[in-house]
Length: 306
Image (cartoon, rainbow, N blue to C red; front, side, top):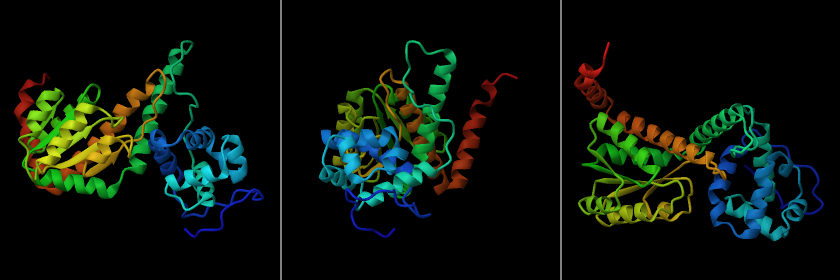
């Protein structure tokens, strides 16, 4: 996409988004993931953009700066943090996002005291569906390929997840086990560390944490990496300590909310990444994977009632 001079106070209308403009959905997902690392002034710009991307796309740089109670320099710095050359490219991406057809939008996904059962169902369904859609849209294909290759070659795979992330880790372990990958899921901090100590070059360690700040998970992947294992992070935040501690980062896209309807969405988003990773790993040796699934299915066939 070609660049144009920086927009100034006199710029009026948002530039028309070309067909190949950077996808706004990916931009907004990336923005949510970067928010913990933004300065207070930059975060005010982010809040304005996320609150109404369509309206933000129509603002001049000076108008957005006034709305965010900051300076034009901060807005330009905000654009750079998103990997954009300047403000015109931000407006193009936001305009492209606004032009995309969307399913029914639920503006407020937080669960409120006065919500009806219908409200709760709509909010949870929207949060979960958005998490899956946005995670798939921004999932790094190259990183997924690298992680799948490493798993397919690995002698063994360790998976670390504490708290709610433990259920995602257990699902990943069960799926990999069914295709013949030697995998272990650990949620006890001490066992995570003792297992990591036994890894070696060619093994894989996967750390799962929505925030990317869970100390026990970070310590485990760092221990695994020190033993030569390939480390993979599954997290919502690209600049988190977990992401920075791993060789490969697979990002989720789930929005947190005050009463944690976002916590269910974060689990769904992580499971989406696990499903993609599992299928991609199986695809490396489809014949072996298919045979393993058939054999494991046969092993439990007698335990199903008619």
